[in-house]
Image (cartoon, rainbow, N blue to C red; front, side, top):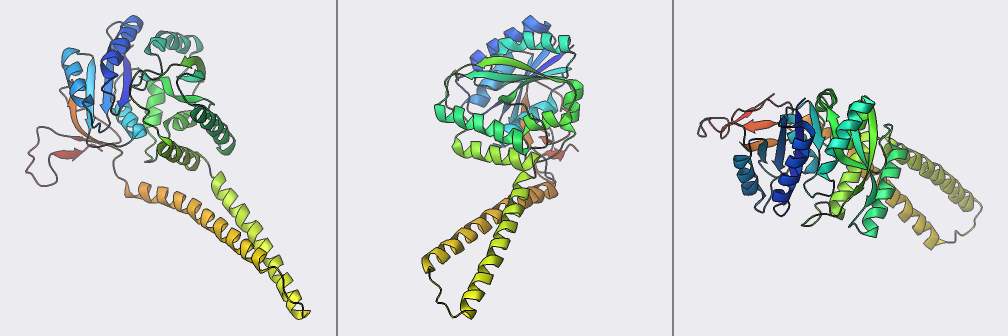
Length: 338
């Protein structure tokens, strides 16, 4: 059995050395020497990439992947999953909030339960603000109610997967990716692994409120048509209300009554206009997703790989060919993989 450990990284220079030591130790304890560690540099602006290169040069188990720009956490993770070669795959973030030492008991759980996915469920979240905990709690429960897929509560991307589960995941080519939801969608036997999440080792969170909101919207629109159904129900209710209001105005005019309440009427108009804009925004979100999917662009572009000599076959992205003639027509040595 071979093991791949996939770690997306963005500006994690303070964590990488300790992360490598702890992950490598956990892998050796669990599977001996049959493992690889993939660091995926997601367009970091600090010294993360030179540190990854140095680690890859010193440790033959390490593969460092440098993306051409910042693609976002979920696409960086996708790139690592696409390139890795193990029979079992551990997904872990670079901030050391998810302890690498849990690898051994997760492998034991996978063997004992004959599972294809062992996903971490957070019993506690050390070092996070009350606002972050409250919004995360609410988000997972809203997502569970709104989606047609049974997405586990309080589970992040920290998980162990079999090769057949990963192959099924890589068959899903959508651009706006919510990987924990996509893993739930593919099925197979999936079992929870409760654990206590630790405090970030160093640096700042890479998910400020703006990114968290975007992540939540991608999750909801990617796995549920409930927002569209809500929009249609609200539109129907407003249409019925508008017809009633028109009938009332017509009756009052025919009866020769002066219509009172200009302020309240304007309030109704403003409310209806606001709801209409909300409905249009929801529709625009779905249309935008369709537009991005229709373009058919690769999910990621790899600029450079350190620690692996051959050019890996991938399904979902482009890998730049370092040996190609950069003056050749068609674009600076980058060739499509698929």
